[in-house]
Image 1 (spheres, helix red, strand yellow):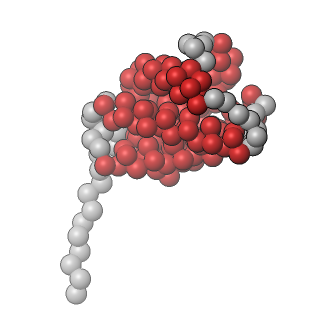
Image 2 (cartoon, rainbow, N blue to C red):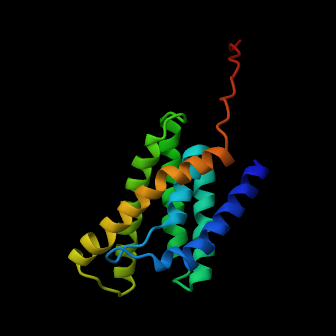
Length: 172
């Protein structure tokens, strides 16, 4: 578990730096690829909700600090995305790659809507058409393009463990 935490920390730190320095310059309409979100979802699918939530919190905190955004906003959203992706990973097969597409779709829409609501509560406004058509749909498309390669990378770094068999001891 400690080795998984170190691997996840290094991978997410590298992804946060790549997101701030490289992918923030890639723009389709007003959408940007969210490498960190896709990685948190991939890690959570493979390691469960608690590990996903912790990964999302620390990755979001690093991204907030590095990009000088509102401290804690991205942490909250990535924590929730990591937790719910981990819950989805518990009920799906680990051998299939399709849950990553479903989780990235739900996670991108959830984080996008959550971000819009939180920014609205903080006093920033954006039109609904610009948000949905200009930002959310291009971000979703870019994240779905990243889903398979990043999930494959995470499957190599975090191999699927066989489930431990529990011995049932009859009550006396």
